[in-house]
Amino acid sequence: MAKIHRSDTPYYQRPAPAAPQPPAEPEIPEEQEERTEGTDAAAETPGPEPKKKRKKGKADIFYNVAILVCLAVFLVSGGLLLKRYFDDRRSESEFAALESLIVSDAPAADGEETNSAKFAALRDQNSDFIGWISIEDTKLDFPVMYAPNNKDFYLRHDFNKEYSVYGVPYLDEKTTLGANDQSENLVIYGHNMKTGTIFGCLTGYKEAGYYQQHPYVQFDTVYGDGTYEVFAAFSIDVAADTSFVYNQYVDMDEETYDTYVEEVISRSDVDTGIRPVYGEQLLTLSTCEYSSDNGRYVVVARRVDS
Image 1 (tube, rainbow, N blue to C red):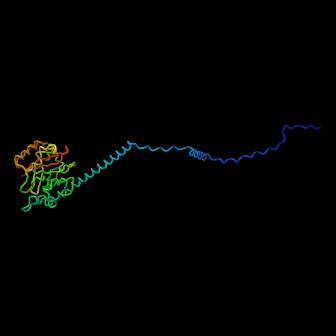
Image 2: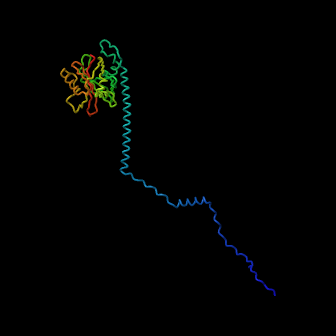
Image 3: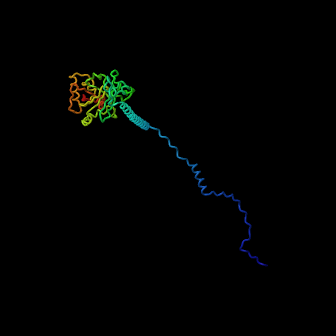
């Protein structure tokens, strides 16, 4: 009987069917995946809370108001300075136009005042015009008005009788100025504009050097030309010092004349060594002086051409 040998190799068995697998998820590219994750993270992570507005305190309000006030003051001040500049230029132009109407060396007709032709155009424009005053090499070069029945009118009116802060130099209403009768002292008022115009240059007579450079005043009226030599210049507070009312010395006898001369010389800022004598007509120029609220600066001269 044949032997049956057992083989070491196992007999063939049919493999069992594999269990079904779920479908594989589609692969997401790395870049897209990161972007998606970032979006989700941003959606999940809350952003910073909005800052609450700080309430303005009193200090902030005060600071803002102060800035606005300073700005307003700056703008107003600048505007006023600009206006003053243009007003000065316009005033200078108007006075220059008036001066151009003077006809030098024009002969007077028989029976007329000496300078009637010389100042005819100015008289035609305003019958209150009485003369022209000037100091060589200064800004003082202006018409002079005379309106004895309208006191201080030209303090705030121009040559055409329109309102003006500059005014026009004018004679004191107590003064007499005619062909045959004139006061011993002609008193003329004019503004001291802080820009140095009108009578502003008169305060220069505080210094001896200024006096030496400008010793004469020219005042030509419709009745004739006049040259006056400065002999005294002084400041006075008309409210505080009532012992000497300088503009009351107009029509004077010899004693009053001498009293006036002595007083102005004693007050003078400069020693000129000149002492007028009775019979020499005086010219007193008065303007504002800003060292006191009611300050005036007064320059006094004597006539030397007659």
